[in-house]
Length: 132
Image (cartoon, rainbow, N blue to C red; front, side, top):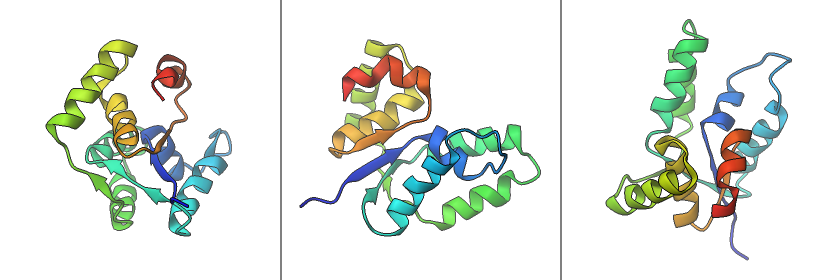
């Protein structure tokens, strides 16, 4: 049986960093991280993940952003190379579903790896769920 491949987007990764009780979905996000850490599944991220996550952390939590990003980088998440094919397919999703290129890149990595993109972004999910 094949090991499942997951591609969590920045909305999931950011929940690993925020500990506030009003942060909805944090437990589910931590389950995703633990799924990968336990070896039950593969996880792969587009190379842009650290920059997108760092941007949000730098705005929302500037005092701890650098430390948190360094911790995340320390996990050494497998990263998908930025290729012409990745960009081409991401632009297709972007234009078809009217979403950001950033979001489309995570989704495209999942499609190329025959995996599952996991998002906590309800707006993105509503727009692009039909893409698979």
